Image 1 (tube, rainbow, N blue to C red):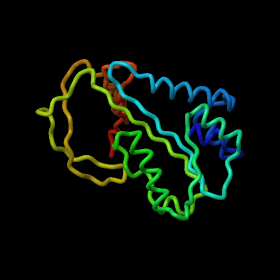
Image 2: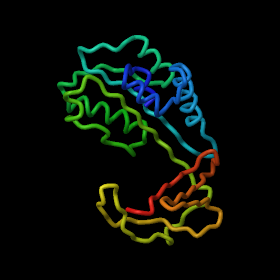
Image 3: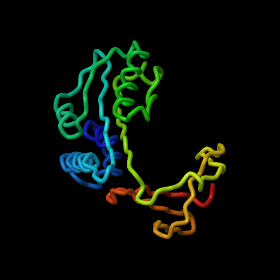
Image 4: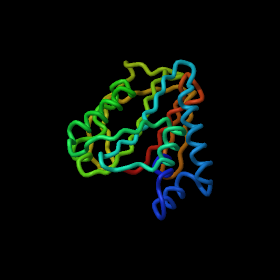
Length: 196
């Protein structure tokens, strides 16, 4: 969102600012998210992190030079112009870029239909791979139903663990579980509503 915020104006910028900057200046907001990205990229204890930021522009459109400077310097974004009327090829270029940065974990971030009528696309993906501080073991896995926000269910493997070192909290509406990684500057926080 910070790359979008840096180029937004008017009501759009105001609405994004309400969510990500809480009254900070544009420069302070860009600096904050730039530093956050650098912290993510300097993981230790075996955590691997990569961030893919890019601004893909349809041929025939221009990008404001000030905006280009901000996103390339602060967010290490690559800026490229492509012929979006050749939507299949452009989608493949974008998908290959993201797949390469994420070790093939994210393969299809866009499709030709999302490219065809666009003037530009801002793409962001994060790759994160780290060992748990306390490992899960396959013999503890069970098959259970998982439900999406839309209410669709499918049976999946669930990891189970009864360790006392897990951080857990709940209130009337939500359960929260925090799972630490070996690099304890990272945690995986799960927020689970009690009602489906």
